[in-house]
Amino acid sequence: MQHPYQAYPILEQLSAEELEQLNIEMQEQRYLSGQLVMQQGEVSDRVHIIVSGQARVYLKQESKVELAILQRGHFFGEMSCLTGDPVSAHVEAVDDVHTLTVSRKGMLLLMDSNADFRKQIVEAMIKRIQSSNERVLEEHAKSQIIMKQQETEEQERYGVLIGVSPSMQELLQNIERLAVRKEHVLIVGEAGTGKMSIARKLHQTGSQGHYPILTLNGNKFDLLTWDSRVRAAKGGTIVVEHAEQLTVPILKQIIETDTQTRIVLTSTESLDIPGVYTLHVPPLRERVEDIPLLATYFVRKEGAKEEETIISEDALRVLSLFPYLTNNVQELQGIVKKAYVLSGGRTIYSSHLRFGRIRKPGERPIIGLALGSGSIRGMAHLGVLKVLKQEGIPIDRIAGTSVGSLVGGAYAAGMPVEDCIRVLSKMRWGQLLRPTFPKRSFVHNTPMIGFIEQHLGKRLIEDLPIPFAAVASDASTGEAHIMQKGLLANAIAASTAIPAIMRPVSYEGKTLVDGGVIHPVPAALVKSMGADIVIAVNICAESFAKGTARNFIDSLMNTIDMMSSRIVKEELQLADVILRPDLGYNQLSFKDSAICIAAGEAITREAVSRIKQKLTPLSK
Image (tube, rainbow, N blue to C red; front, side, top):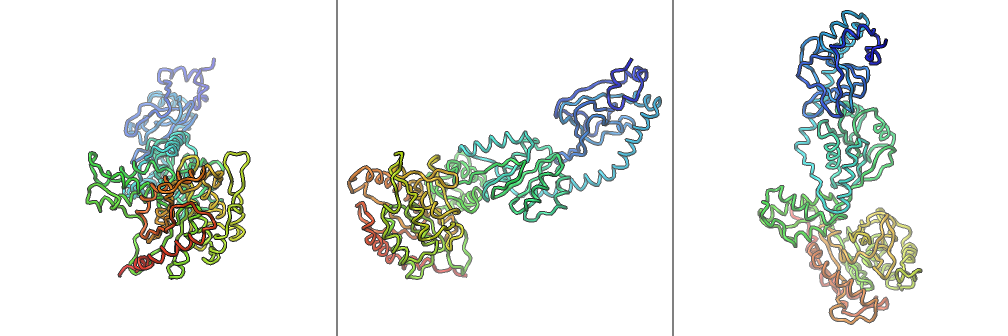
């Protein structure tokens, strides 16, 4: 009659009689996933033979260093059981594990009575002894890699993930879901959005920090270093930063690496990699409601006490207006840190905030022009450009909202001022708009795209001679949407789509309307684009204060003007020169273009001396 244990691995070569004699020396054990089976340093009096499931052998240092994965038919604990020496490594259940354990007495009886069993055990022990030196060297190398990187990471400060915005809450939920699935992940986001913090959160949540997390820089990638990192990070996570720098074949090769290590790629652009889940990290400007929380957290890190009012309301409002194009959350942290120093460790006010770069001595300042919204009044921008050109004042950056995007986009594309005046001052609504059917809005501005491309060609924003950005509003979220790439004509159409009057424009996967209700004069945007000196042109009307609306359209435009006027005062704090053309209080038409251009010229001539004073390079 067959003994039940003869169906178990290794023991199938024993007779039923031999197994019957050893019944008292054998026990069955079951372990749940993650449960410790054997502890490093203890002396084991039993050998475990795996009947089903998998067990992980690892060393516990700063983090887990995996040595092997054992499965059905493998055994462990024999060296300690037979020699009385301590166990050299931890063993834990990877999934539910079923083992048959044999006592030291039982092992000796088996080895004495069955030559084949004795040979199998002895050969296994010899093999382990022979490989021990190689394993020691390998684990020492792993430890050196891990320790060196951990020392570096102690000096770096990966931020915590803070946010109450819907986009941030969705991101955190995705991290929790992905952490337990162990699949490879691509994290896509602009510089400074916290991609490495997300990678570490994935690792910590998925492995409880028991296994190593190592990083590689895609700018300095080589396969030799990759192989050593993969071995060292076994069971944990390896992060490849700047993955957009790697070729598609290399990306596929590392993703297909046969390893039990999670691979996380970070990139500033989307990559098409089969078998990898993509996490998109929103830029800070698309989760403005998180800025006060982040700013408060950063100033607390600088030593501010909990009970103090550490950032004033006006400072928080200005911080929330800035788009942080250069480095997102990290840029905000730097601004808050500097402001806390300037405040002397007291409450931070808007006067303590410093945005933009630090100029080098002797370097000419970068001049940025912020052209505001205001419908027909935007023809005044042409007068401003005309005088700046005549006076030899360079324009290095341009941002425009609504009509400001139309004038600014044309000039940034290389159209001479004279041609801008000739073409734009002769525009008529019939060239730009058409009625909509069905009547969800009055008109759509699709013809504007054709009008622009007729005079400028099919231009991409990122290829323009002067760096340019247009501002629109996301109709779904109410947040600002900044357009610095893609088709220029479509971006201008989105920026000029007046809410409720014109049909929203689909652009870059979003539904967009006029940016005037968010950033009527985009001074903060120009500063974030790298301008040292910001010239802001404010043409917001004040007809709501002194004029009378003639019809529904006038009433709607007055409402937009009221909203814009409240926002613009705070944003203009970031401007170095503010130009406010005198356009009166009446609604204007295209027939009044000459009046608007003249007003723009007049106000700019008054400001020329002030502007030129600010162009003086810093002393060396």
